[in-house]
Image 1 (tube, rainbow, N blue to C red):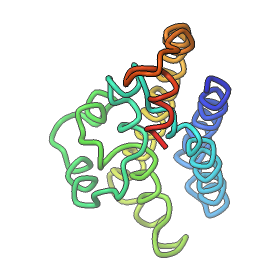
Image 2 (cartoon, rainbow, N blue to C red):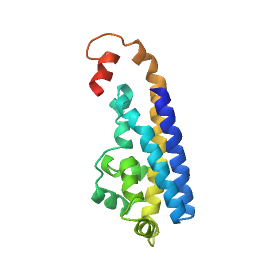
Image 3 (spheres, rainbow, N blue to C red):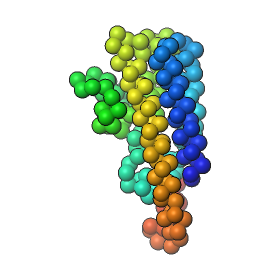
Image 4 (spheres, rainbow, N blue to C red):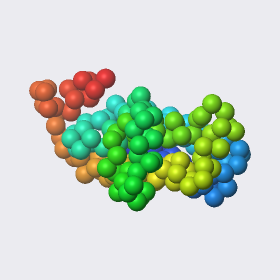
Length: 174
């Protein structure tokens, strides 16, 4: 469990760094790099979905990472806020407008040209939101990895066969 989350955290950090590079140089090559980094982060996250247990489940952290399908109108609304566009704003935004699915919506438009055009709009609204989503995703990945480090002992020691036993929770999550 922890190695899977450690790998996802590594990929989420790489995604954030790649989106930072895209923000500094919005070119086709940087967009392709960001899209590949997103794909690697998503592939690393998929095994982690199984482990939405214990503290991760109770805090709904995994919902902040990936809720699909995303809601394009909620994303637009989040970007058109009168509030300051910052991490606190992203944290208050609904789960269908944040995380990997929202980043997919912003990174994979009809084609590279239209995607870059949208990301380069006058106020850089989409680019700023994408950058905040990447940072938020990285932070949530770190939070979940820490939560599992703390929850590990409880999970391992919960060997009973009842509803709250680790084996039962794991099987039910399948």
